[in-house]
Image 1 (spheres, each protein chain N blue to C red):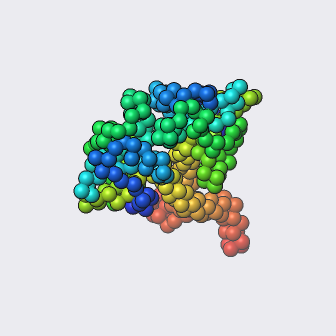
Image 2: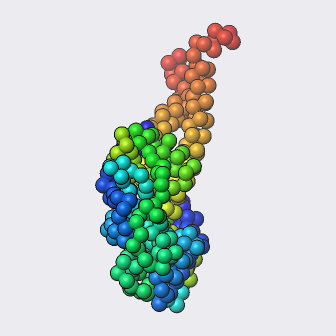
Length: 159
Length: 155
């Protein structure tokens, strides 16, 4: 079974908790994955998504001067690079978040998203199914032999 | 065969291009969706996402038409799952309004596609496991039938 290290995004934008929400908003609109991680002395302490910012925009009527720490989600639910994909999926189904920082030795090493985990598992299943198909073909050939070829062959060899 | 109508989100939230970005933010939050469809005379003309709302606030825009995005593709309810996956992977289109007889009946986003892939894989796997089990038992039976073991046990 593949592990999180295989599917995680490694280029994760980070900010400090003192940065303002405006900085976060600017950085988020430039990144692919719609999420950034807040670090303190290189240790990840929080996560911020586009949804958090939209929620803030609604309540603050557009003011973006506050520090990020006021709206970030903390503490974080994280995975490690060694987490197996099926364990990752279980975690995703119980926690119901879409994005998980990947942490090793208290340092941020990547970001795992629900979509990437699910799609990677489906791809693994395709390989699994290919092997099952080969086994199935062997079984079917064997049964064909038993039902169609066995009697004539026995007569031929015996007679 | 899975088609668009089986995987789409039926509750689709539409907004006019002359509405304000704040209205869009309120709708995104109150309806708990990540995309709204901008419609004109009930036809989809653009989409607006959480990111577009943030961009709008940063650029001090006020109307939806200033920040809405054209990165979407209209599909019909019978478009196949494979076709939609292909568009997602090759063209990087992540939003597909579903239109039937000129009316908007649903939307498919990346997460709908991921959920459908998941269900599809699970279903496929169950069917395959059942078939494999049946043939496996039959094979085991015949192997036993032709082996000397049968003669030893049953004479």
